[in-house]
Image 1: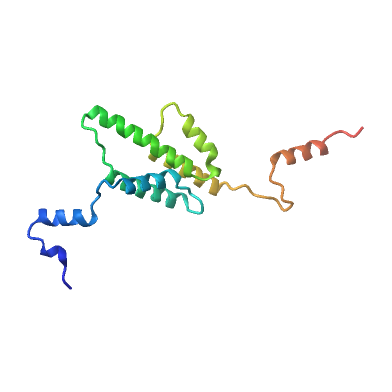
Image 2: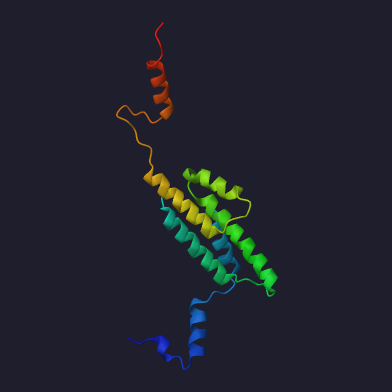
Length: 159
């Protein structure tokens, strides 16, 4: 088997060959497609972890094709903060509706959380929902309010 990569005379030539083959050129159509995927990605039937991994793969591809153009360190920080907020919103928009309460809590925080800390919070909530699933009695009652009303009615004096 002839390995084409071993035929490059220098490491620089090999790197240039790899960049040509697998390069992350600034193709506007590919960049548009990646942003569209990031903005429309939904958890759907995926686990939270699988959804998160899909988003991360898209974000990494965007970063390769559209690296931070800023030169000044202050501008780099601002650009990265804006990018983090966009990714936070993409993540929160894409998660299932059962996470509405934690989504609201994250959006209401005074300091906008990083997308990574938001994922960690949603993951904890997913674990909590899994562990503390509501149970049903043999009659199918799930409401504590119904039980309390029944107890009050039974303990009421007859008159």
